[in-house]
Length: 128
Image (cartoon, rainbow, N blue to C red; front, side, top):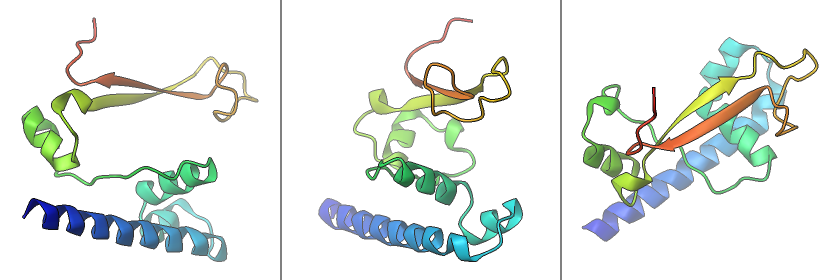
Protein backbone atom coordinates (compact mmCIF):
# COMPACT_ATOMS: atom_id res chain seq x y z
CA UNK A 1 0.00 0.00 0.00
CA UNK A 2 2.92 2.36 0.73
CA UNK A 3 4.20 2.01 -2.84
CA UNK A 4 0.80 2.84 -4.32
CA UNK A 5 0.48 5.93 -2.12
CA UNK A 6 3.95 7.07 -3.15
CA UNK A 7 3.02 6.55 -6.81
CA UNK A 8 -0.22 8.52 -6.34
CA UNK A 9 1.68 11.38 -4.70
CA UNK A 10 4.22 11.34 -7.57
CA UNK A 11 1.43 11.57 -10.15
CA UNK A 12 -0.37 14.32 -8.22
CA UNK A 13 2.87 16.29 -7.99
CA UNK A 14 3.39 15.94 -11.75
CA UNK A 15 -0.15 17.19 -12.40
CA UNK A 16 0.36 20.17 -10.09
CA UNK A 17 3.70 20.98 -11.74
CA UNK A 18 2.15 20.81 -15.21
CA UNK A 19 -0.76 23.00 -14.11
CA UNK A 20 1.63 25.53 -12.64
CA UNK A 21 3.69 25.52 -15.86
CA UNK A 22 0.55 26.18 -17.90
CA UNK A 23 -0.56 29.00 -15.61
CA UNK A 24 2.84 30.62 -15.82
CA UNK A 25 3.08 30.25 -19.60
CA UNK A 26 -0.26 32.04 -20.06
CA UNK A 27 0.55 34.76 -17.51
CA UNK A 28 1.94 37.13 -20.13
CA UNK A 29 -1.32 36.97 -22.12
CA UNK A 30 -3.50 38.36 -19.33
CA UNK A 31 -3.66 41.76 -17.62
CA UNK A 32 -1.35 41.95 -14.62
CA UNK A 33 -3.12 42.88 -11.38
CA UNK A 34 -2.59 41.35 -7.96
CA UNK A 35 -6.20 40.19 -7.68
CA UNK A 36 -6.21 38.51 -11.09
CA UNK A 37 -2.83 36.89 -10.44
CA UNK A 38 -4.10 35.40 -7.19
CA UNK A 39 -7.30 34.11 -8.79
CA UNK A 40 -5.94 32.94 -12.14
CA UNK A 41 -2.44 31.68 -11.37
CA UNK A 42 -3.05 29.95 -8.07
CA UNK A 43 -1.71 32.70 -5.83
CA UNK A 44 1.48 32.51 -3.87
CA UNK A 45 2.50 29.02 -4.98
CA UNK A 46 2.39 29.90 -8.67
CA UNK A 47 4.27 33.16 -8.13
CA UNK A 48 6.97 31.43 -6.09
CA UNK A 49 7.18 28.62 -8.67
CA UNK A 50 7.74 31.17 -11.42
CA UNK A 51 10.48 32.92 -9.45
CA UNK A 52 12.23 29.67 -8.57
CA UNK A 53 12.10 28.36 -12.14
CA UNK A 54 13.36 31.67 -13.52
CA UNK A 55 16.36 31.31 -11.21
CA UNK A 56 17.07 27.77 -12.43
CA UNK A 57 15.62 25.94 -9.42
CA UNK A 58 13.62 22.99 -10.74
CA UNK A 59 13.52 20.60 -7.79
CA UNK A 60 11.02 21.99 -5.27
CA UNK A 61 7.48 21.38 -4.08
CA UNK A 62 4.83 23.13 -2.05
CA UNK A 63 2.54 21.30 0.33
CA UNK A 64 -0.88 22.61 1.31
CA UNK A 65 -1.73 21.80 4.92
CA UNK A 66 -4.71 22.27 7.20
CA UNK A 67 -5.17 25.59 8.97
CA UNK A 68 -4.43 23.98 12.34
CA UNK A 69 -1.16 22.44 11.07
CA UNK A 70 0.96 24.30 13.65
CA UNK A 71 -1.14 22.83 16.45
CA UNK A 72 -0.23 19.27 15.38
CA UNK A 73 2.55 17.24 16.99
CA UNK A 74 5.82 17.32 15.02
CA UNK A 75 5.38 13.69 13.98
CA UNK A 76 2.04 14.50 12.32
CA UNK A 77 3.57 17.51 10.56
CA UNK A 78 6.41 15.31 9.34
CA UNK A 79 3.90 12.89 7.83
CA UNK A 80 1.82 15.68 6.26
CA UNK A 81 4.74 17.18 4.35
CA UNK A 82 6.58 13.92 3.66
CA UNK A 83 9.69 14.81 5.64
CA UNK A 84 12.17 12.04 6.42
CA UNK A 85 12.15 12.89 10.14
CA UNK A 86 11.09 15.63 12.55
CA UNK A 87 14.71 16.82 12.42
CA UNK A 88 14.08 17.78 8.78
CA UNK A 89 11.23 20.16 9.70
CA UNK A 90 12.19 23.83 9.60
CA UNK A 91 10.61 27.17 10.28
CA UNK A 92 11.44 30.24 8.28
CA UNK A 93 10.90 33.96 8.44
CA UNK A 94 11.38 36.59 5.76
CA UNK A 95 13.10 39.70 7.05
CA UNK A 96 12.82 43.04 5.26
CA UNK A 97 15.94 45.19 5.24
CA UNK A 98 14.32 48.45 6.27
CA UNK A 99 17.72 50.17 6.28
CA UNK A 100 18.37 49.43 2.60
CA UNK A 101 18.79 52.46 0.38
CA UNK A 102 15.85 53.05 -2.02
CA UNK A 103 17.73 51.61 -5.01
CA UNK A 104 17.89 48.19 -3.29
CA UNK A 105 14.59 46.59 -4.30
CA UNK A 106 15.37 42.88 -4.67
CA UNK A 107 17.74 40.08 -3.69
CA UNK A 108 20.23 40.35 -6.56
CA UNK A 109 23.07 41.33 -4.17
CA UNK A 110 23.21 38.80 -1.35
CA UNK A 111 25.32 41.19 0.75
CA UNK A 112 22.89 44.08 0.35
CA UNK A 113 19.46 42.57 -0.22
CA UNK A 114 16.01 43.97 0.38
CA UNK A 115 14.89 40.61 1.81
CA UNK A 116 16.55 37.80 3.76
CA UNK A 117 15.13 34.40 4.69
CA UNK A 118 16.20 32.83 7.96
CA UNK A 119 15.64 29.07 8.22
CA UNK A 120 15.88 27.26 11.56
CA UNK A 121 15.16 23.65 12.53
CA UNK A 122 11.89 23.29 14.46
CA UNK A 123 13.75 21.40 17.17
CA UNK A 124 16.17 24.32 17.77
CA UNK A 125 15.33 26.91 20.35
CA UNK A 126 15.84 30.56 19.49
CA UNK A 127 17.17 32.70 22.31
CA UNK A 128 14.86 35.57 23.23
